[in-house]
Structure formats: C-alpha cells, structure tokens
Length: 261
Image (cartoon, rainbow, N blue to C red):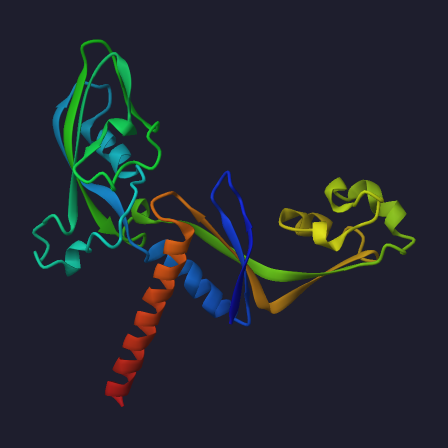
C-alpha cells in the first residue's frame, strides 16, 4: 500500500489522498473508523442554573452538545478507560461555564473552559438569543466520545472513489460535436482537452458525454480518499488515529482467534 497527498481544499479543510493497492473492504473500514471510532471532545452534561430564554432547557443543552470542541487526544482518556472508573476527573472530563445577559445573541465563544486547549472550533456559532432582562447561566461537562455513540463526537466525514484512468483523443471527429456539452475547465489554452485538468467532480461531468474522445475507466485497486474535518482534530490526527485503532482491532482479533483454536 502507498499513500500520496493529492490536494487540499483550504475553505473546508478537506484533504484528498491517493491510496494504491488496497481493497474496497479496507477503504470502507478506514472510512467507517474515521467517522465512528476516532474520539473527540463534546459536551455531554449540562446543568442549567438560569435560563430566561425562549428555548427549553433541553433545547439549549442539545445545541451545546453539537458545538465542536478542539480536542487534545494526548491530554485526555475516555471515561470508560480512566483510572477514576467513570466517576469523572481531570484526566477524562473538562468543565465549561457560561454566563450571559440580554439583549444579545449568545455565542459559543462565551463558553469558558478550564482547559484552554478545549474550546469551541467556531467561536461565532450562535446558541440562543436573549432579550432585555433575560439571563443564561450554566455549567457543562465535556468528555471524549465516539461517533458510533452520538454524531456530536464524530470528528468529520470521509468518502472515497476508484481512481479514474482518463484517456483523451483530441483527434476524434466527435469532439467538436460534444464541445458545447463539456465543462470549459477541461480545455487548455490551445483549446485541447487536457486529462490533467479532469479532476474531482469534473470526472463525473465528462464521463459518457463523448466516449470517442474522452474515455473514463476506473482502477479497482487504487482509491481517491477524501477526509473533511469538523475542526476538533486535524486530518493527520484523524487518519493516524484511525489506523492505530484498526491495527489494535486486528491484533485483538488475531489473539482471540488463536485462543479459540
């Protein structure tokens, strides 16, 4: 297996990699592990002290839980693996507080964390609007969790597609007939189709439009793998942690299988 970086989308943070010599089963296992098993921090418990807003306490708590929090995987332990045996301590929980008085729109940046490393990814994310005289005061507990428990703990999304193998025949007589139906981005300055310009969504846009001039095939052993983070972790942290989790599971399976013989 080889892995090479293809591109970075600066707006979304999405990273695209080309992974060669793997199976669809392995690609899907990596995808699901990233989405479901890589842990992140999220607010799990909320104690409402004052809530004068128009929203019920449960709605405010629900919104707080969905705020992505920057996560320090080296500094915290999942609650079910902590020495405190789930009681809650500084190794597995983080306390956050919020006090606000209207009129204002309460933003995520107003959450004050006891650990400066654990803070909202998007500080301008709105929580609730307070009118004049209304107040909101609460205390939150954030813990590490996984996406298969609740989507609020998922670090991002991942998807993949077979690597396209593109063959271009600029000498085809059919190309002139199809030109108006092809994306202008695939033509170079001289007006010829450049296979290197056919990337991303453009692959599907040209597939089947003019098969005599542009032929799209798929390599079943190579995959374009995309990872888009929600911000709690970097793409590198998401991928390397997912590989570590998979390796641990394979080792455990091998051990259990050996014991079962």
